[in-house]
Length: 350
Image 1 (cartoon, rainbow, N blue to C red):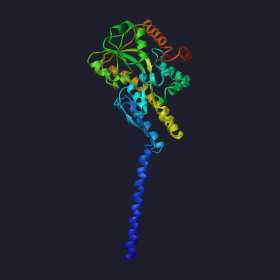
Image 2 (cartoon, rainbow, N blue to C red):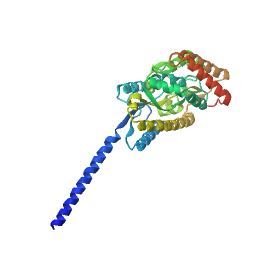
Image 3 (spheres, rainbow, N blue to C red):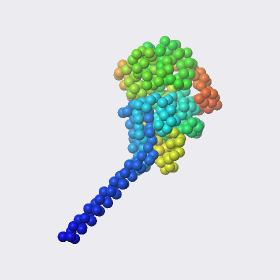
Image 4 (cartoon, helix red, strand yellow):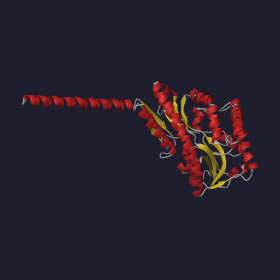
């Protein structure tokens, strides 16, 4: 009987040791999972293609790093607009952000050349420039304290209004929104000869509702995702620009990670942001048809002469930016590369 009691007592002790060991292992795994936690924020709404792919990216790096590496994601502008996100990264309150034009002005001003008005006519032209000038763009991120985890293109941006717009003079009667602090938009509208109303992106929908503004520029998919389309009637079928975007991380946070974690982050970033870019392009094409069904009238310029006039204003705007965001030498090289590619490939489709 004593033998059986001793055996049972030993069994209980073993079970306690096993439970304690499992508890320690669990606690260790939890701590390890937060070892390289990246606080990421964006204005992109939850449920959008942007956020869906970002979550896939997060799942992939968590799996590959055995839970050591991952994002804590704040979508939908809950951490503020892009200006606020970059300020919070500087302060260490955030580590990473999904940024577009306004954020890129701070994170990599040279890369804003990709947002130049009326520069591109096809996505093939865009991809070619990203490839040719990757070193210049990467250096600009690094010089400003950031690392680019992958280009997350917004796509071609169009002008939406509540009155018909076909030629540049039609825009002069529009109360056009401009993203506050965006030198690209400022130069583009200045070249056209209009005076836009600067507002944060988070104030646009309310300003459309109150009629403070009655003109915006945005990609077709984003117009639907942000619900801006519901307050406008017309879309000018001339792409104002191809809006660049990227997922960035502070260089300080990135440099503090082991090489293997950096490699996982970069490799998967490139993979999933390429996926996002392709999906965004598909979404934008589908969204134009959706906008038509929702009552948006798509207007084309009345003549080739009108289209050429927009392109000439684009050239003028780009010259205004030379020496500010990017050098005149780089602008000349990019413009030449676009023309060379266009001549060789004959591609002018969107």
